[in-house]
Length: 125
Image (tube, rainbow, N blue to C red):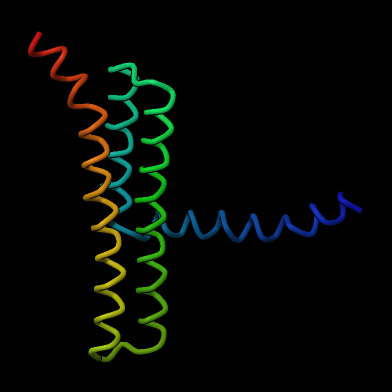
């Protein structure tokens, strides 16, 4: 019974992976997020952050990625509904982009709280 349930979920995973691939291939901002993801993870290893700090960084990185993916989905749905210049369509796209910016700014604060003391201890002391 459980095997049949799990087997029935396989297409859902395929669709999700298809979405991730589409998102990564088609969205320009994924290249920027990839760059900063690599920088943050490398810095975390170099500065030997704690396990808790690393978990916070990973959660923050995933949040920014998810916000960007949702923004892309909103843009596609709006474009599906109308390609005309309409105030509500613009507002929907702008609000979704704003959500990404909020996450990105928050992630800079979180990264600063975690990394700056470690960097100061290296360069100041």
